[in-house]
Length: 134
Image 1 (cartoon, one colour):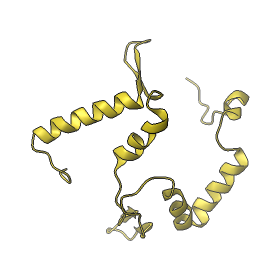
Image 2: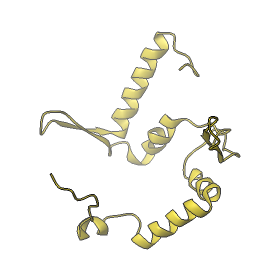
Image 3: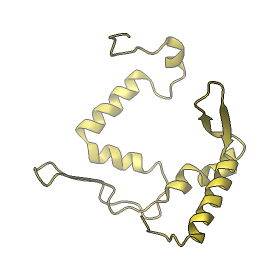
């Protein structure tokens, strides 16, 4: 086994990234120097039922350590991850499932994922599970 802890991406992998190394460094610096501003900006990239006004609420005072993000915001994660992609990507692959046996995989489209999630939601509803149950 290798003792190498840092693995440098290949030139090919770097060429396919969505951000350059310089962009990443700038984003990282902003996330450290202005976490509330940085994450408020990132939060605008998803759809909110009620957008958050409280971005970050943290306390590291032992024993009352508390870390809360977007605590007054309300969103539907399924709508963000699946539903909003249906109009343009219904037939594109959303997930690639890999089984334990090598070569066993399934490509699941956004439409199929949407259908399966809704089917399971109806199973939960039939069992009496309601919005807000945990």
